[in-house]
Length: 310
Image (tube, rainbow, N blue to C red; front, side):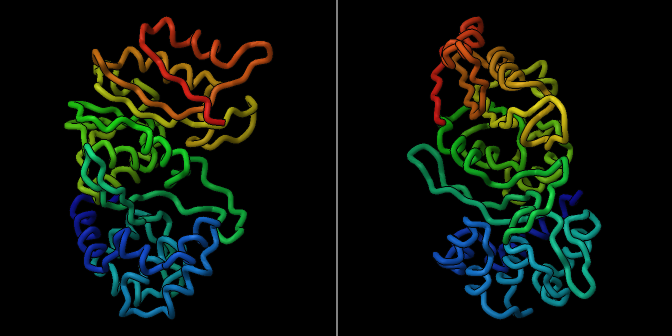
């Protein structure tokens, strides 16, 4: 994957191009932003104007946000010596006299709160397979970008200062960016090696120091406890057979993955520690949903607040 030196050089290029959240959102305008929310790139493309090698901000937006094939001369002008390392790392793919993105780097940010400073950085994830109505199939180890679920978890998480935090199932790394504003130490885990590779780019580009570890659930932190654990585990309860996506369905039947996240997580908390999970669970005929969850949670000895959102 991308070396530390290449990542630092990429960050310098992104800053130089003003490829930052506020600047890019201003450039796209309301119509462009709303179009992208519908997975339509046309309004954003109109807002960016005609392609030009002298407009690095628009070049990077076309390459990574609109997922266009962008002329090599424009990409080289925007990224300079970083093009070679990006190609070698498999993040850019040559396409005749152009380049296409094999992974996305896009600006990310959040406003300051009463207890935490503003967040500004970049998120690295896999391209959207359904942009502009395309019906491409994601790779099995697809790394999802910013989603309503990840945004909801980020908004709900308690932001009081903590000494240690665990980002369980880091994905593209968005929760760790928020944790960095109020946690002295961050450990992040994932079963998907590609997620760790892309999250490493996210955290390094955004100046976040996180200890990233490969492994299932709590295996990578077997001997540790934390003041705060955040987790948005695979959320689709699927039939036992058939192809699965790592980020979406996991590899355990029914809601067993969620049960383990909760029950085993209780034992990974320091005294007065908190765990926050955004998840799905099964609704079983004849069993009230709250009794099913209470059966998991009561034996842990922890207090729990459960909100059924949908």
